[in-house]
Length: 345
Length: 165
Image (cartoon, rainbow over all chains, first blue to last red; front, side, top):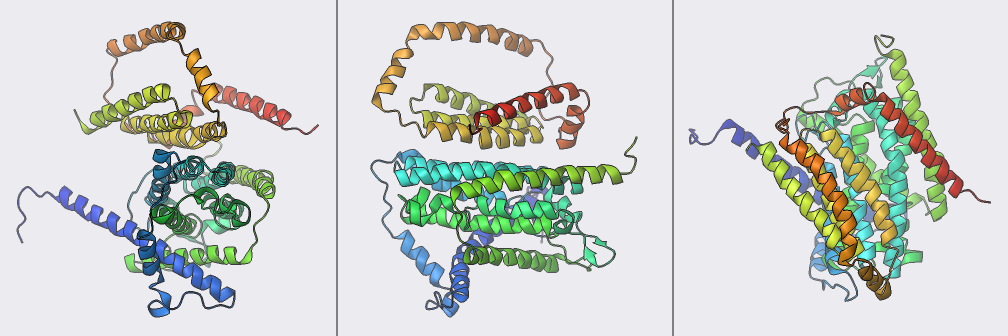
């Protein structure tokens, strides 16, 4: 087939990339929406109930029914709210969580953005995502929402500090902020049978990363910003209809994103142990399988752990996690300097 | 104009406009949001100049951490009518004279730099994280040490303020 002369190879490449990006982000949002069903079914399983099993096979249609319902509910803005901020907050929540997924490579060839500053980009996005909760809480002009916003701000700022520090160990090992290179760095094995994943080499960092990741997505046991018993619904008390829906879906997008990041940073990304040149299909299966495992682990954490007091959360962050991550940073740097060729030069 | 220059002027324009809106906006939280927009625009300017590492640090440190603390404090101050009136009384036209003169004095070095002719086109060379690290721990080591000492002083002060008697 002859193409018209004005279509260059570059344009075809860009078109392919755009389609790929749309497919990946759509897949992200759809899997996040279906995670609501997954969470309800799994919680039910662990609590000896059935969960939603009426709509469609296994209750899979429940999400569609819920979405239809939430679309047609009255979209009400309270008269005492600050309108502009009230409307922009859910949009920020959704946009930031989706942007965060941008830098994660699904396989060696399937990715949206291959940024040299990939991990920094994620940290920046995680920092900006706080504004959704702050603005939602403040603009609602209601004391429960404000308290939720304040709690969330303090919690996220505290936990982002050592989240960044703990990830720097991973960056040092790979010598790059680029997530693809971080995955490439984990391909080999030690002694021929232990995969060289960062979860072994950076175990302390992984210990610190898990609570930080939970805190960033405001999941139980770190869901103090929306603790029902104390704050009604926290920062989204005043939200209804699709604005609330965006807050809710953004939380699940956040879970998918953070699970994918856990896979990429600590569990070898698309790597299949003991297999050379996996090919894109096996890599994709490996990546999605690991990510799915961590998504289920998130739900298990919610099912298993109660919510601690607020001061306990802050104390655990500053007095336990921060020192661990600093020790890990110093130790990793020392080991790298010790083993680097030509370190004395 | 190439793509870098268009991006530079575009985001520079956004930065200037949003910074002006920070000053003239009567609502402090809205003003701070404009400041966040301004910082993001400045980060984009850094990007267009070929400094992605500086751009990301700008977003992480300023937009993501410092501004969040600002908003955190400001949104707890529900000041009400009397304070707004009091602040309007402070901002008489006469109060602008002093800051105006100081800013005009600062304008001279900037204009001189602009008109001097030492211009390099934007985005020629990318300064990545490694280059920044090499520069910080090479020629600028003293500045890094001084900054760390200042941060230690801040840490000690914060510890003292937070100490239980």
